[in-house]
Amino acid sequence: MFIKTFGCARFIYNKMLGDKINYYEQKKEILNTTPAQYKSEFEWLKEVDSLALANAQMNLQTAYNNFFRNKSVGFPKFKSKHRNKCSYTTNNQGGNIRIENKYIKLPKVGWVQIKQHRQLPTDGIIKSCTISKTPTEKYYISILIEREDPEIHYSLNTNISLGLDFDMKNLYTDSNGIRAEYPRYYRKMQDKLAREQRKMSHCQKGSNNRNKQRLCVAKLHEKIANQRKDFLHKLSNQIANDYDVVCIEDLNMIAMSQCLNLGKSVSDNGWGMFTVFLNYKLKDKGKQLIKISKWFPSSKLCHKCGTINNKLTLSDREWNCEGCGTLHDRDWNAAKNIRIEGLRLLMA
Image: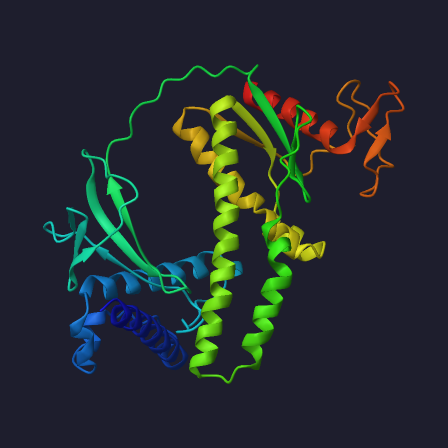
């Protein structure tokens, strides 16, 4: 039933998108349809959850609105069975989604046994849930809960603050001179991953052997992703517990991976994921994450006297300040400047 619902949600998305494109090409107008209008022609759509199809329609409409709001977002694309993520979202109506004794009840599916990793808040109301399947054929369900946010009254102590300078090799260097020492999980697994991918390329497409090898490759990717998330969660949690204010640079990681030919390294260390984790963990504790401009000269600026070294290049890891003669470690000096600038912005 899950696989059937994935396929129906993908089908209705593609069908409605194709009809919208054809209608606009003929009449130069936007076509507004609903999944119910297709059920007479495709009766098998009645076998799955109607709310899953309705949410697919809403996702398509959101993609359309985003495109007309900002053309750089890109026009909605057709979903592929093999490349796109398998998932669908359904809504709770009249208590048709509920959890009892390690089982969850879902519309059109019934009771399904689950491994619940966290108890739901007793004061929350289940609004919707999203069922998804990973490339390694594991099924997950994420539940959206609505409840009142508890008021957090926390007095920020700016003396307990930290500056983080992004480091391609170590993830970051902080204003205390400590480096994160990121283990670079992808780089460690790269040779084994290449070997398994080479085996898959030699298998005949559509064969059982190729599917088995595809699962082997997918499990390696999943292991790397899980190792990275585990490391970043623990690191961000430690920082959120120890510091009241954390200052970082507002970097565009996608542009860095494309312009500097550092795609693998940028994707491996997961700086963007780390900042997301750090942001919500600090927010939950009533603390703050401050982002300074990416154009701020944190590496070139002496944190002691304020002299700017315009001759500094990317290859220079240490430099002497012409103003005060201090020998600076490039990343440590940048982290200190990021902390100073972030506190200035916070006070302003």
